[in-house]
Length: 131
Image 1 (cartoon, rainbow, N blue to C red):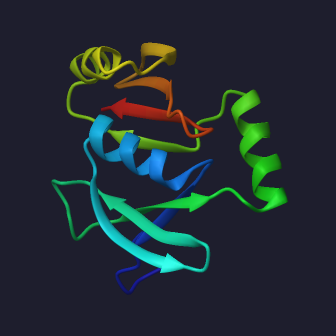
Image 2: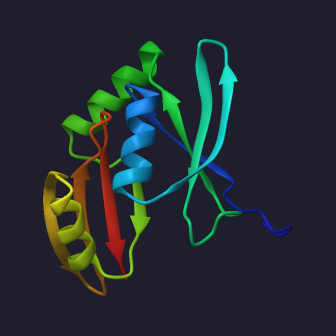
């Protein structure tokens, strides 16, 4: 498809938006981009500090029954809800572990890519990868 199509927003379901904001900003290093009231919840997004005008990650409140089933099912199967690129997977894993992050898969290399998976404390498994 031509026309400059790009990813603008992507969501992860979270149990508690405030806790998720704290984890994604203070532990993972993202920056808060948007924080607006949305009924009893918030339209809450974070971005990479390296690309503040890039794709936004929506910290979506997990209040929909179907979303809860989905989140639980993929987690139980060990499937990450999202994948984030890192420059140095070993260093990133060490830093995250020092912040108390629990990994379900330690850095593993497959071909030219290394991956690791951790618990985001918000109900999701998140993968990081280094190419």
